[in-house]
Image (cartoon, rainbow over all chains, first blue to last red; front, side, top):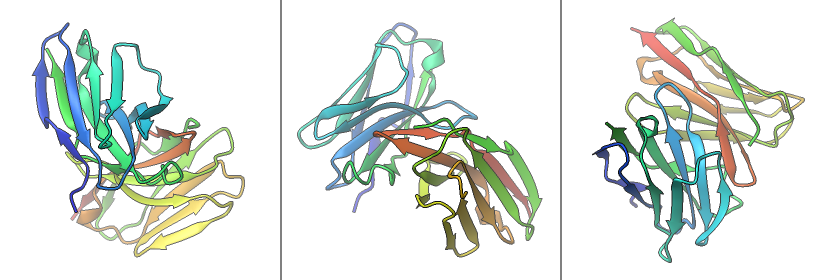
Length: 114
Length: 109
């Protein structure tokens, strides 16, 4: 079985640009969460989606948005990129809401904003 | 999730020595998860604790949840070079997981 897959693996963008990151959860998993991990810190929660509905939102500006599709895959969009948005963006999937505490992470997308 | 603090930030040990990382909160936690992230990798789920005073073991790893459910620890017996990485604790509440900043373990062969 494939694990959580994220694309692209690496990305370089210029300040002010927009970026879309993609995530495919483990087959059968209905929940997807997004995290931002800056070097030397733990993952910071951005969004959580379950059954295509937003169920949780972290302390991130409105430049960050996300959605989940009928096949449970998800996209994270970041507008008006800032240098400080450079980070590893992680997607995690869980089978149900009840099992959110056991999350399976993808390899992440390394975003560099220059 | 509730804010969780981890200590120490870094730990360097000789192979064969023991290692412990601690996770603390000022408020009662309903659960604690532990993850390991290898250098250049992604967090990998290790275990979850939910009961007061709970102790779980995975081979050389021992996980504990405090009686007051405000702290947790991960202890590795006789470290090996394969144990290197950053160990994170996390708390999940209402769909939101809050991670500590991790303890990075290096092991000298």
